[in-house]
Image (cartoon, rainbow, N blue to C red; front, side, top):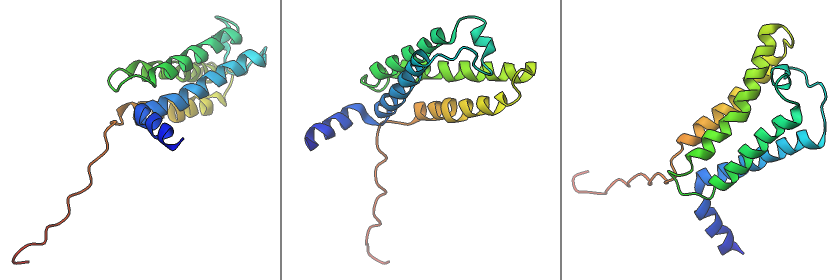
Length: 146
């Protein structure tokens, strides 16, 4: 069992593990919008004017499933997963920002900042994390004349 877990961890790597975790979360978040109908979500008028919220749920679900697939790709080929991960939270942050500017939902600014920092910011950071490990610092040599 340990060997299988180690092989899985080695295959996924840091970036793949991140995509796997976040992809699962985004998929579940989208499914939540399908399961529990919210007829008048506060601050998302920009989105609900275009389509009902259950349609927007598929944005989260498709992004999450794409991330789950990209988690298994080699480094250098997983970029699509990180790019797609940015779409749903950026869309939500934009909707909340518009709600603040229009005066419809003054508290939406906090939600927008939350999506931009805890989602978009973290994804942008994780996309830059190298897969390789940093080698340990070389030991100081004991030498002559010290």
